[in-house]
Image (tube, rainbow, N blue to C red; front, side, top):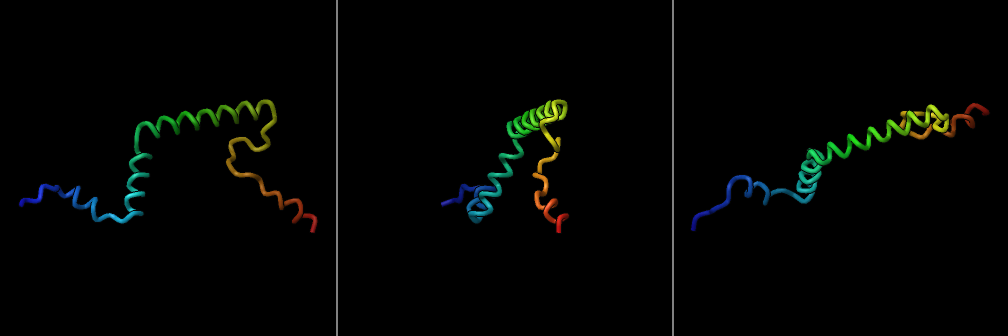
Length: 77
């Protein structure tokens, strides 16, 4: 009986669970669908930050982190 598997099928069978998950994530993040959706979300986020900056409801526009709330307490000590 001849083995009808190509090298890719044989390699895929030897991958660990973690390697298969990593390959799935890499395949999804490299797709055009992901790139387009991510680009749209970034432009929406930028638009909201521009609106927030002009109406002064966003104290730290274009910053993804929450400011350190411990800073005022540290200055008091």
